[in-house]
Image (tube, rainbow, N blue to C red):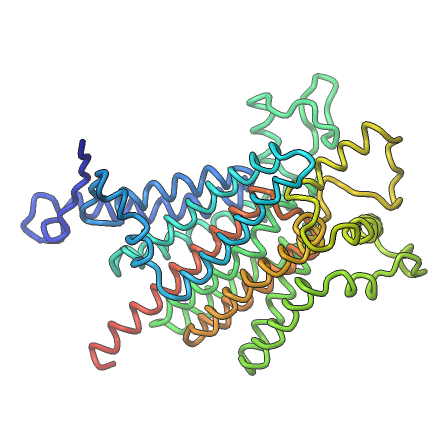
Length: 461
């Protein structure tokens, strides 16, 4: 059986064609899908898996003039994907696939193979959606790329405005929606009235949103610089507005991770603007340090008995105890680790068999708040090397870009790397999806920049 989805590009763009509306509708759907994905990613990041899936489906339906699904075409799918990716994208895709394959292989020595395979299945689906999205983006026309890049900017700026309002109003929109729907009526961190309605939601509830923003800001910045390049004054004003929105969000949020990540990205962008080679090799050196030498680096920066640790914020003290305990456990199986996704399983098993550990006591947690230590603990040296190659492939790709695209992608990489260094776990689906989606948005902005440069070159300007 053959299912055909046909879009006649020439007819759709012809001024006398009865299908002109169809062509305009197609472009608008792509733009709105990008805008909605960016907006929802900032508003409710836990659902990022769903947003990327819908975004991928929209691209699959509308990115080509003619999509034919047959058995023969499905068999040719690997060749189709290979031809749609450039060399740098293929390098990144293979590096990620190698890491996922070894993580799945670790189920043979994991304490609970079912949990490992279950989580890896989810993440593999996310990876395939990411790969499919990149493939379909590469098959878009120049006008479609431009429209989608504009949609990302619009959706992201609207999401940033939402976060600014929520932080300034004490989560007014979220409170009213939850009271209206009756959802999350028994959260311990919420403040309730006698009738059960929510009175206050702490600002910490927006930490995930602001963390996503620290990574998504860079594709927005790249999109603005490309979109408004013909109008320098408007472009500079729009960039200032973007910074004017994100800075108060970061200042008034309680996500220290997002603040550190944004500062790291900003420093990287500043250094890249002054001397790209210096910024590039500094970032590469930092990546080598956190992936291959994170254990000695952690022991030097936060030794177990350092006096200054007790003067750190409570969350930082907690992390130091988790990190040092994880290092000790890692040294028991340093080559292949204990198996992917086993940090949470071992932590839950310890709680059942031992008294609950006191805070600031050496222990494991649901995750290590450091994906590099978690990689060493769960996948050992082999996993650390594979993670190193993933980041190296991304850095190598950024070096091949032109102009400000390379500088901003380098800043985005630095922000994402710092998020993984200071918080969250490496198998959290929402975080992985957010990183993949922000990478897709950067790809859109870069392709938009290249198409504009090509058109200007052909016109002699």
